[in-house]
Amino acid sequence: MINNSYQPATSIAWISLPRTGTNYICELLHNHYKIISHYEIFHRHNFYARDNKKIISLINDEYSRSFLNYKDISLIKWIHDHPDKLFTILKKSSIKNYFSFKIFPGQLETDLIKKIIISDNSIKKILIKRNLLDVYISREIALESKKWGHVDTSKIQVKINFDEFLKWFNWVNEWYQLFENELINIGQNFSVISYEGLHWQKSDKDKFIYLINFLRTVGINLELQNVVNKIKFDTSYKKQDQRANIANKIIDSVEFKKKLHNAGLEYLLYV
Image (cartoon, rainbow, N blue to C red; front, side, top):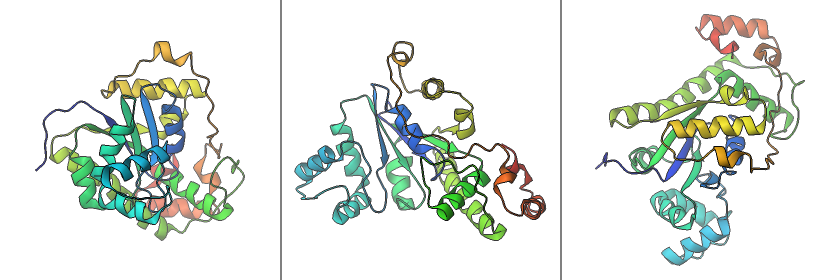
């Protein structure tokens, strides 16, 4: 049974896709003293959490296990079978007011997403959205160049198969709609933050202020004025591609534009 009674927020779920700046958001957010910012805690091959040794030790003690490390296959299986137990440990292990994590498509079964994440209104659900054509191109550039981060890819162009892009585009929209539709059906709020809106801010400091102000508007109680000037920002996550014109990233962009136009998706060329 879904419990819709009010519960104070204890965590933040960043619902998104790879190539949408989630690592950068996690790094920025972790600068705040009230938040511990985890990464992909439901990754299919590794357990990407801060202080993962401490967390794994707590899991072993609490549930009489003997998991070795964040790559332990049996740990990964246990997490995917018992995400509710993982959340219990994450709450216990955190000495801060909130913990955050991110979740991508394919990392957790739909039934568990509904049961463990969507139905729990102590978890703030925030969808990170970026122009989906830009996301797809960024992924294709990374796959082709094998440069996934920390490298300028502004001179690389890729050829996009329109049919494959359209199939991916529809699949991604289903991912976001899973959360939007289910949360609307149970009368629970969710929020959307724009990748472009964040990166229109000039400096790490400006982006941090933008992010914290956004979280404050959705009910996460975070101090800002006395925090921001004490932080020495040290993120190594920078935009890899500085091109503003998406068409400049595509080989045979004229033909691709025609196909986008015929599908009613030409708006994706404009950020």
